[in-house]
Image (cartoon, rainbow, N blue to C red; front, side, top):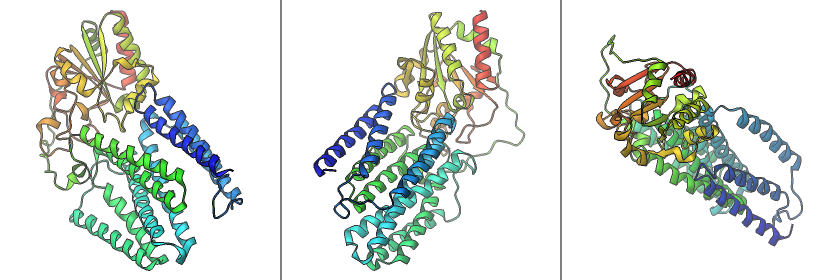
Amino acid sequence: MNRNLYDLLGLAIAVCFILALKGLASPKSARRGNLIGAFGATVATVVVFFSPHEKSPTTHHHTLLILAAISFGVLVGVPAARKIQMTQMPQLVALFNGVGGGAAALVAIVEYLKLGSAASTADVVATVFTVIVGCVSFAGSVVTFLKLQEIMTTRPVIFAGGRFIIAGTLVGVVLSAAWVIHSMGNTSIVVMGLLSLLFGILFVLPVGGADVPIVISLLNAFTGLTVAASGYVLQATLLIVAGTLVGASGTILTRLMASAMGRSLFGTLFGAFTAKPQAASEAGEARPVKSGSAEDVAILLNYAQRVVIVPGFGLAVAQAQHTVREMADLLTSRGIEVAYGIHPVAGRMPGHMNVLLAEANVPYEQLVEMDEINPTFPQTDVVLVVGANDVVNPAAKTTPGCPIYGMPILDVASAGNVIFLKRSMRPGFAGIENELLYDPKTTLLFGDAKESLTKVVGALKSL
């Protein structure tokens, strides 16, 4: 392929990636942005086979192995993406992100071994960066997957001297990196890689509850930087562009999410070491709650003038988005104003609720972000909380030292009536009790969200 044509295609692919990120900024254009990005990635993969590389201008080695690897990736990735439940999407994102970081680290190691003593200092420095960040991203992403899948505890894992062990491991990574740059040996790079994997695990263990999605975003940014660095090692401009875009956007998203949680990124990652222990409730203490039936809920909704629906992870688990949309349409047809209160970190990943409700074709104008909807709660007659807990928990304002303290929440407590759809009195993802459940104006409707909403819709139709 002519060099000018190759560079022109590279520019077009870079534009596709930029347009994809722009499209993903809004639910209305997210699908189009995703398709543009996928098209650009496909073209980039094909173009590589025709790259006019100076070291091998006409021959590409191991073509069959490369095609076999691509085929294997397609056979695994496509079914996984199509069959995955919305509730498990964050875990899939974490795994795919980790695979990207691990792959970049392996490629950098292979290139390092191939160059040997011929590697320049700049090549070695780029390789060291790629291996360290790639290994941290891979190991950390595996831990986030285990937490989200609840294979291990979702709470912060802390241990005596944990801060010092993490700091000591980081020092070991830095010293081993200096060893690699100085000696350019094989043993040193293996030691550095193993220490980086250990640091990635220790880095994520202290994070728990609702903070895990923030770490996924941070590790995604790490993977982007890893890919960009590996692009330098491989002299691949497309990898540099794509990696830089992912790294920059991931960094911005991480900062926005940390801000939405009302804390610094450092506090998100290591706050568990300084958090004060919470007083446990007395054993066997039974606190009364007001529960109701689907008919009770239907009556409250039918005679309201304004209803706000707060979706959460429980809505995704029950796959009740279509039923909640049916209920909202029924209320709207009776002249009742309906809106959806969307918290930035509701669910298990950014935009989780937006995507879930988009599946049910909920009108975009009904989706209202936290900052816009909070001032309207005092004028709201009924708030229907479907499977959410932490994002409406007043402890974020009233209980210093709790895992979510300082996180901005949806102020549903200021509404006239609050209805919680819950399976049980089990706490939310952060593992803390919600005092709003015991408020006299709160009614609990126990059961599967989809079944409960179906009963509510039936009761509404009979009124």
